[in-house]
Amino acid sequence: MISLHELETRFQHVPPHLFEIVVELRNLVRGIAPEAREDIRSEGLVYYYAERGGPVSAGICQILIQSDHIRLAFNHGVHLPDPARLLEGDCLVKRFTRITSFDQACWDDLRTLIEVSSRFDPYTQTFRAPQAVE
Image 1 (cartoon, helix red, strand yellow):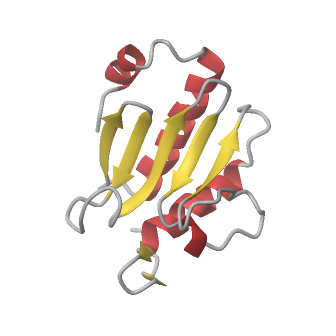
Image 2: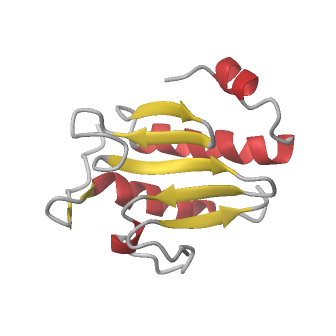
């Protein structure tokens, strides 16, 4: 994983209230999928299972930094259950949710979306069973 210092340096232009959201989302992904690869991209961070493919075919999520919010994006979001109706977007399959405030974020629902996305297999369009907690 990329060090917090490296993230702070790379995204020093990001307002503190938005960077705080990035760090919390990152912590969620690390807790759900500790084996996921984390890459820094120009707009933020991308998480995927490198042994299964690349950021699209094996993608979990993207944390994208916008000027006034953080966008948590899912390449296969159209396939994810979204009972809280957080996801939006008009692309064929990609969906995202906007997070403008740490205190107003629906953290439990965001955690669920990340967890379900981490189990989605785009080749079979099915969900892998949750991993047993040891």
